[in-house]
Length: 148
Image 1 (spheres, rainbow, N blue to C red):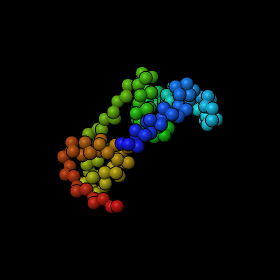
Image 2: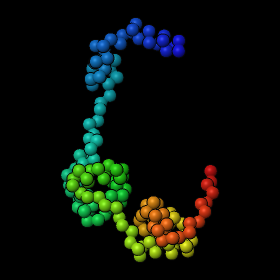
Image 3: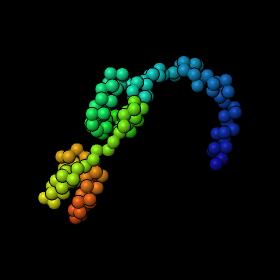
C-alpha cells in the first residue's frame, strides 16, 4: 500500500503534465521519437474482403453453403462472417439434419464409429451429431479417459 502511495505522489513530481499526456494521445507527437506507424487495416470484414468477394460469399450463402465452411475457407471467425452476411441481408439458417441422415449416423455410431469420425463424415458440429443421436435413441458409450 505504501508503495502505491509513493508511486502516486511521485506522479505529481514527474513531467506528466496534462499537455504532455494530450500530445501522447496523438500520433507522431511524442517528443522521444517512439511513435510507431499505425496500420489502417479496416476491422470490418466486408471492407477487408472487398466488394467482389463479399458478393461471391453472399451468393454462396444464399445457395445453401454453410457459414462454417465459408468461414473456415477464409480463416475468419464464424461470428464475424455471420454478422457480415446478415448485414448484407442474408438469412442464416442452421442446416437441418434429415431423418435418413440421423438414422445413418446412429447406425455408424452403433457400429463403432467415434463422434469425431461422424462429425467429419457428415460435415456437422459435435452438438448437431449429439442431438441427432439422442433423438434417434442411441445409447451413448462411456467417454474415453483423457490422456495428458
